[in-house]
Image (cartoon, rainbow, N blue to C red; front, side, top):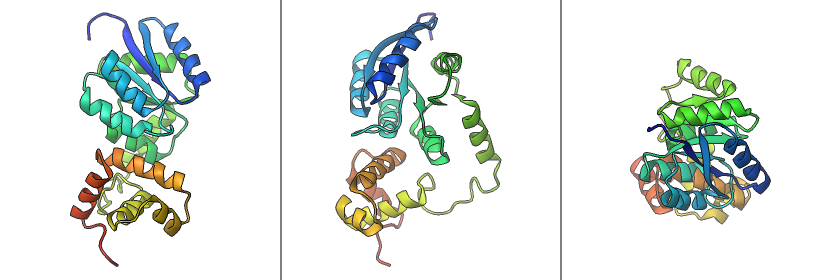
Length: 219
């Protein structure tokens, strides 16, 4: 990357946090904030328009979530790096983000120094994580069970695989929610995460992948 300010797009559905983060970043040396977005759909459109070096991405947002947006951005705009900034520190979220193409993962408790280092590092092709996230990543790959899962789509959680199976059987969100005793909003969010993890653009594409892998069968 040439010696120029690193341009950043801030994506978060909370306007106060988003504005505050834009202010913090704007005060850091070598960084210029070029835009903000309130959800994944806005983020994808803004990246196409602004071509930032870095997208600082929340995960949990209404509509198009951060995972789906990350997968879309990293596929369509490989010169733009995504750094996740979220409250989610569970393994499922961390590894789903990495599989979607994220180049860094920080928690919202991170201080300005950590964010500064992660943004500049990602702009130069490095992958940086917050301390607790790094421990989880190392522990995962040190585990003898890390590659032992033979179930289809090991990147999915058991619940996500269950929902995908029901989708493949032709059930809609309402029917899945009733079957699994979940809210429709929860099912909708899980379906969005499934599409991002499978890098599927539509439900139909995800269903086709699932059926090819043997899901959606009776029994």
